[in-house]
Image (tube, rainbow, N blue to C red; front, side, top):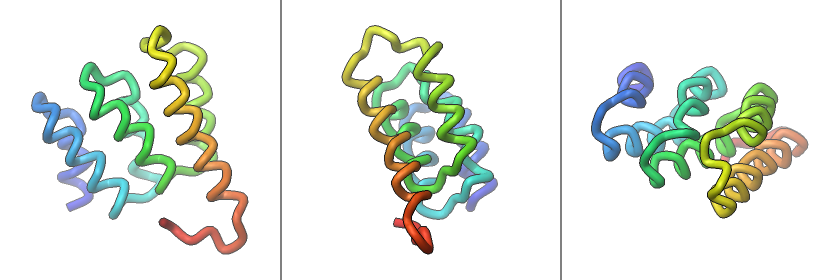
Length: 105
């Protein structure tokens, strides 16, 4: 399912992209995060929010760096609620990585 889910992140249907992000948040790993991060700028709100939340569950240090870059130059600069959401999700990665034995949620 992983490979199919990753390829569905580029689907023209926003519902398919959203479901792919959600599935990857459950069964994916850090190596699956790169294409998810690109969806932080998706035109559909639900996909964007999911793309920020998924790395909070499976992302690592590289996703923290990618989210920091996106927060500086992302294309949704006027959406303060969304920016706070991305910051919160980025901080969740940091918190998860700082825990001993880092269990996946």
